[in-house]
Amino acid sequence: MKGVGFVHGAMINRPRRISTEMMHVSDWYPTLVHVAGGNLTGLKLDGYNQWDTISEGAESPRTEILHNIRPPARNSYEHFSYRAAIRVGEIGRAV
Image (cartoon, rainbow, N blue to C red; front, side):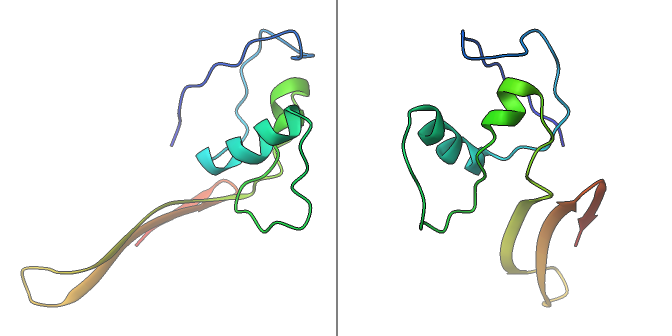
């Protein structure tokens, strides 16, 4: 899955490039808190600080993304079924 994003500013040390690193929407909070000089030490968050990835082009600290989990629903055969998708590294799995 791919998405489009745009970050601009004087704090970007390696501008004008395309990143193919893995990033999730939950990574924005710890990233923006870091840029603002905040401290999240001791908090358990799902997101990662991606500032080095955005600013320097470093490898993303994220290795997995849970794309979706849909609660059980009855299908036409009256069985309960889950719908979910996850990516770990370069491998994706839908169930």
